Length: 303
Image 1 (cartoon, one colour):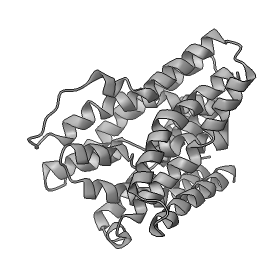
Image 2 (cartoon, rainbow, N blue to C red; image 1 turned 45 degrees about the vertical axis):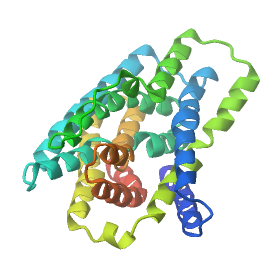
Image 3 (cartoon, rainbow, N blue to C red; image 1 turned 90 degrees about the vertical axis):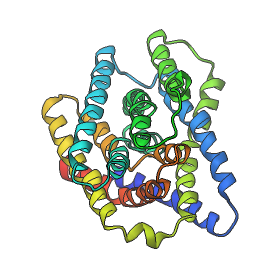
Image 4 (spheres, one colour; image 1 turned 135 degrees about the vertical axis):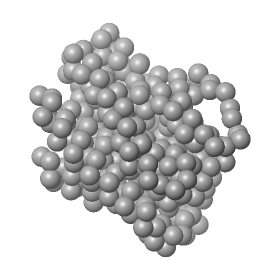
């Protein structure tokens, strides 16, 4: 019930962004500003907060267990994506759907859901999933999206070693150092971290406002893809994890990580490398809308 309530709260934030954009109060520029704030300020604060205010109780063994699970999850998603898309007509279509299958919106949607529904320990667990995510999207993701294209670009280390990864490393350092932070620093960090949910979902709402929803809802292939991505994989994946791990909280986090929609980052990469960003945008839009229903549904089925 708590997870469903949190999804409804996030849905309200998303609809607020949608209607304000449709009314002309917020535009694409505002969406980019909000997005920058979430990526570079609010999300890092959300990751760091549990370790500087000493709310988390995770041991090094539990952290290592979560990191191993994150790596295994992404390896499994790569294999599953290849199998599911093998019957598609063109290699570029296969590659784009593989990207959407592998890369979930763990930061913009996953973090707010986990933080509100499961608490600080779960948030730190979810933050660990960003490490393989960042490593893969700027390496394997770029390989997929440029496989048949002419545009190539050298991989930049700073793309992988970004603010999200730095925040995770800093949070882990704080977890082991256990410094006594001044109360005003903790209060300020908490205030900034509270912006993550509203701003991230408003960004998604602003993005949806610029699309023709008819095109989003009339793509039969995307509906089939969404069914597999948002229901089949999270249900089967979480049931397997439950059998393998004796860690209920990590199982819940894994369920959310598997159940979140397509990452908005795939659209940005598609635009950068002249791929079909329209298909990616429709995939992000449809899976985001459906995930409001499917994440609580998966939780109800497996737990």
